[in-house]
Image 1: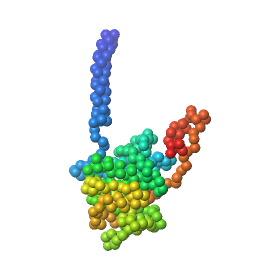
Image 2: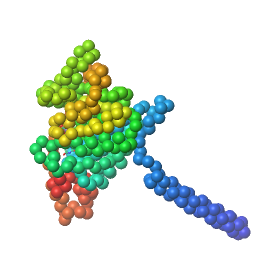
Image 3: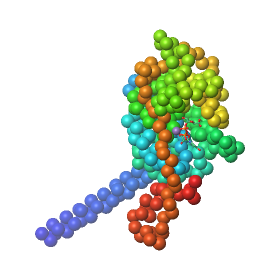
Length: 305
Ligand code: UGA
Ligand code: MN
């Protein structure tokens, strides 16, 4: 029994030795693989294979900025995008620094994303702000450098999107348009179609714009963007959409596809959240040893704005 015990002991200690060498080897190879994955693999891009196994990639450009509602808006939009295949979410913040909480929320949502910064230049911070413009131009810059196929869409963080809209827009050849609900006095902004052909635009504010549409009411193919190397969004509040579309010209109305059942349905709504006041300061003395100190880190204070 004794010798057996020892012999068993010896065998097992050899096994342990063998096992631990293997374990070290696995840890070593694992570390090397993780290193290679983090440092050598190019930025994640949705797949654009031509074997029809994947639908064409979608690039969703979302401007965002720090305010009490920001994490709530990103959560809602992100949960919607989670239902959409082969998509890259370009979340672009109007800020000088990355915010760990935005990363935290994006990681938790789990939609493939790239988090970029694009602060609004100081000179435009007067009067009516050109909101989200530097963000969207940063998105275009990213696409010009990284994308070759598929479609991109400017999806503000506060709108409400039906997922079928994303499936429809994937196949746009040049430019696609569709109605957006909850806009201006007309309640909807939409191309007007007569016998399937464009016959103007319906919007409570035409304002002399050639393309009186909302940002949420159109998407563009990446290939078409590449054919228009100078296309970008101007810092001109309220004229961003029309001037961006004009920068894509030549653009015939026959180049435009009218989605959402030929503009008879509403798949995106221009919702707006109630503006919340920044949270009142946290009382360190009373609550620093409670859960509230963690919740405090998720809130936006006046001093953060
Ligand atoms: C409407 C249009 O839907 C916007 O696409 C357009 O940029 C805006 O008007 C405009 O003409 O200025 P609206 O709902 O009035 O949008 O604007 P917001 O939702 O407040 O802002 C549009 C986007 O820009 C949002 O995604 C928002 O997060 C972002 N934003 C807003 C910034 O990045 N920085 C800001 O200072 C404000
Ligand atoms: Mn909005």
